[in-house]
Length: 232
Length: 175
Image (cartoon, rainbow over all chains, first blue to last red; front, side, top):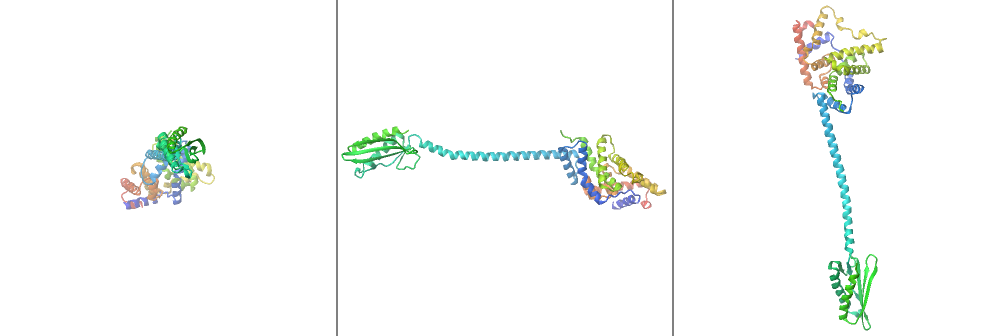
């Protein structure tokens, strides 16, 4: 085979059929091939972006030694472009969705932060109160404690056990109830106040002179019920 | 919308196969790459407009190349170059028996049956006539080197067979 090739080459050379193209020309020819094609197609108003893509694919595959027709290359470039477009669109949609979800999550988290405040407001609304331990003069003895207990029992019945705290002012209750039992020369003075916690204003105050412990128990109950009705 | 039609497809495939051949042929005749590029572009532009009527692209392109080259010299170089010299028939430089032998070889090279198909002919033109390496020809035509080598071998074999058919059994006589 090689001998045959050499013989033919010698024949062509001797009878001057050869037209050797210098290497630098060959390099230029290879480099200008695509640009010249584009120029021709543009000149003939036959150039489009789809054709451009198909030409690139066609020449790329041919250079790799893959024998494809131009129509096959056009189909490949079309499919590639479609896949690329779908991929880009999908990625964009996913990114937008992810961003949207994140924004929604942030919005929701703000709502969650607000909810406890609303609950707090709700809890502090209505008939809710803190009953502070009644104070009393030294000679009033245990009567202040008795009055506190009677108030506590009565208020629990009137406004509900969950709406009443005892002894701790740092709660979310709306009102603070304070009171005292003071020794008078011939009896005792029972006093009770309802203070609005948010404004520190006394919204109701009641006092009653009592003669002994039995009357204190009775009057404490009455006063507590009256006071409960004043709570809004 | 899509301009990728059969016409474009045909043109681009012909262009891909023959661009190097035409450009190279022009280059060695005028020794100017820039002018050769313009001429090759003009040849293929004309082919684009006429390709529906063309049966043999190689012959048509080489013929049009000669015509465009004549126009080129007439337009730009008629004062410095004798146009006739550009396309001097090489066979005229041979005398007596050698001229006859050359004509025999020329007949064989112009016979399409020697090559089998158009692409084998382009391979032969690039490798044997224009002295492209097989790797370069493979790149230009979108084939592997082995495919080029195989097809080139077949063409050479066919040429030798044709020479024998023409009565030339001893090649040493030609050389």
